[in-house]
Image (cartoon, rainbow, N blue to C red; front, side, top):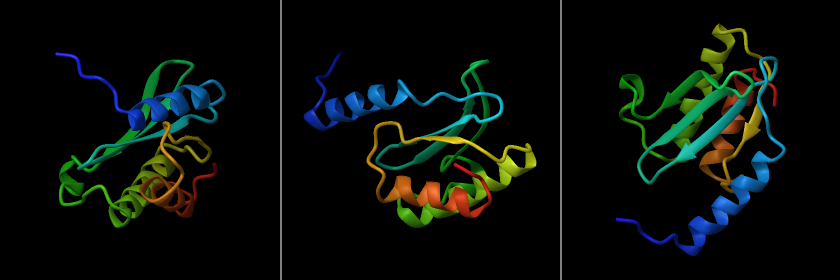
Length: 120
């Protein structure tokens, strides 16, 4: 059963398509993309040249199962993601906010990743 998109979803999809025209991940500078649902947060680091996910993190993982989709949890996820990227020798990424406004949870995740030593 297909459901219709709300106006909010339609606007996000429009922003997402517009952003993805210019944001592209390479081996030297992969794309860090964020997805948020009502209950969980997800982040992936993607090499678009090869179409491979280099690293990922979410609140569904065993270590982060107690975290929710809020700013405090986004800070913890961002720091952990920064540590994972450092382990894989990735120091620079391009940030893809995936159509979400750069505010709240998305901003907290990006700032915490920067704080962990990853350049945007």
